[in-house]
Length: 104
Image 1 (cartoon, rainbow, N blue to C red):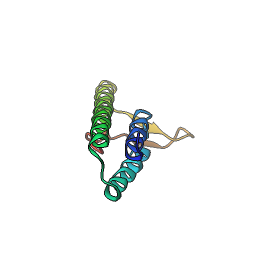
Image 2: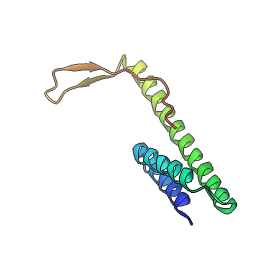
Image 3: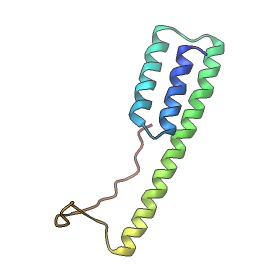
Image 4: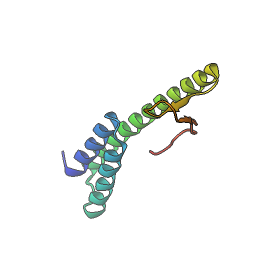
């Protein structure tokens, strides 16, 4: 396994652990590595498999987030809104559910 493939494996592990920042850093390192040292055909095939795996992980994470947002919207509609209180229990902040996030 060469360095580029290890970087993609690190990116996959970070995505599976829910750490998008570590995943982004690994992908940036991968891009820099490939720019400095092009992949041979064998390494390219291995990296393509890792990239396909990473894409699957990212899509699964996105589906999970979409499902959680849908559940929160449904809960909010049933309860008449979701409010957040500070630790003292006095200050209220209305929660706004943002649109679908697409980072990867």
